[in-house]
Amino acid sequence: MLSLVLLTGDLGATDKYSVGVGVGLAYSGVGANFSKTSKNDMIYASAGCVSFSSRNGSTCGGGLGWINTQFLDSRLGNHGLGVYAGIIGTENEPDGDKAIYGLGLGYYYFFNGINNSGTNIGISYVSGKSSGQNTNSVILQLGYQF
Image (tube, rainbow, N blue to C red; front, side):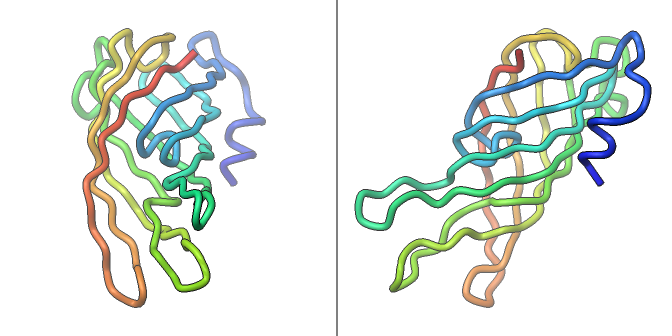
């Protein structure tokens, strides 16, 4: 469904595509994202790794998200609230590390606005299931959208 949103429809004057790199929820750990941005929205697909180990290898995965600036800052588009579904962590198993998937809610600050290239920071609360139990954590973010 996200692929259809990103790849179809009219590309308006304020809509554009962006690639970002960084660490945090919008990058599925340490990774990258591909997004469609407008004046107030960013819809993205991300791929990255949440753990690296010489013993168990890397734990990598992907996610989908949406960030909107209209709730907090509709004029400049710097402050955004977002939702995310995808990889949020790793769990140690006897046969190697296993990815934990879940949901997240976050706050993001885009220094040059959501629709412009530049640095962004954020903080997110995530929740998922690990070994049948709920796991919750806070993830910080630092990234750059091109």
